[in-house]
Length: 188
Image (tube, rainbow, N blue to C red; front, top):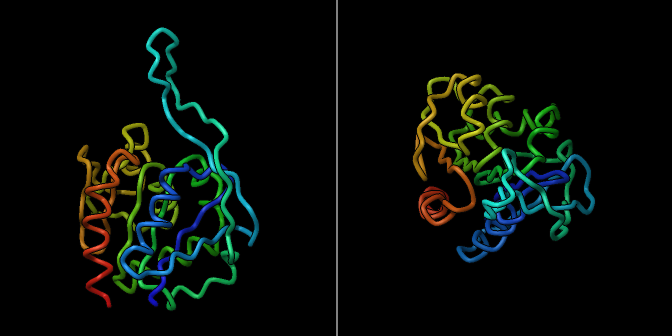
């Protein structure tokens, strides 16, 4: 069974993370969750509350489910994976400093394997230096991250540039996964 890597950390966004875990399995891929260490991680619901009477200018995080990373970044052999899915939430802000995660991320671009990124996942791609000249999308508040990585920000639900497919938020999971699954299934 081909494997797809899903790097996470504490405060990974719940829907950005659990949707790919199950969707990948539906098409016969093993979703391998990796983290800074092999252990349980806390996920969060990462959203701007819809109640206009209590405005929030930033994203509020609420505790959600837990998910176990079965492998640490340092132990990942990226050549064993068909693709990588980079979820959002607050986790990318912290795990983007992990040298092993950056090595892993670069491998998928160097090998031209399918890469999907949603929301704050763009922070990892920027840190890895793999966005130069690429069209990407992300949550609007991460536009600067995309541009600092020398990517071209596009405000669309789903943007494809070569082996990279990106989406703004989990609200765009349907077009993101339609595209990502076609890319992955072509590798079988």
